[in-house]
Length: 121
Image (cartoon, rainbow, N blue to C red; front, side):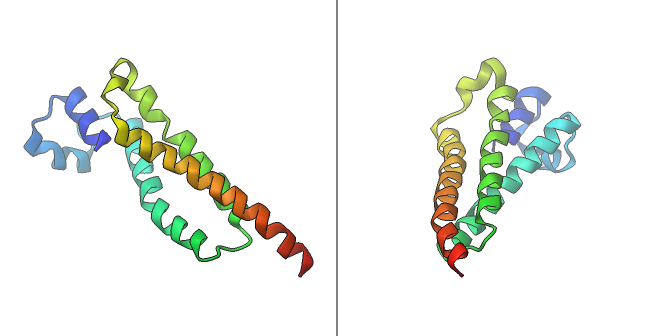
């Protein structure tokens, strides 16, 4: 949704053209398009990673925790992109953003809990 709003704000796009422009990334700089797509990928990965962790995960828990922490840091770019319009970011953005941090913290805690088990086997 933030990508659509960014395109509308910066590309003078009419609402019915948003879907076409979002897919083709017309009227948006390439690096902004890459940021939008990468941000969407972090969102798409959130649920499977959460379910994976809930059902036990694996020894790579710490790596996945660092990846979730990286997604949290990466998704900070919306605050930078919006600049003086960052007030347009509503509570939903901040809840979404903080969820990556909470996932990372939970995964780090699980990886610490798993460490003694791995050492004893």
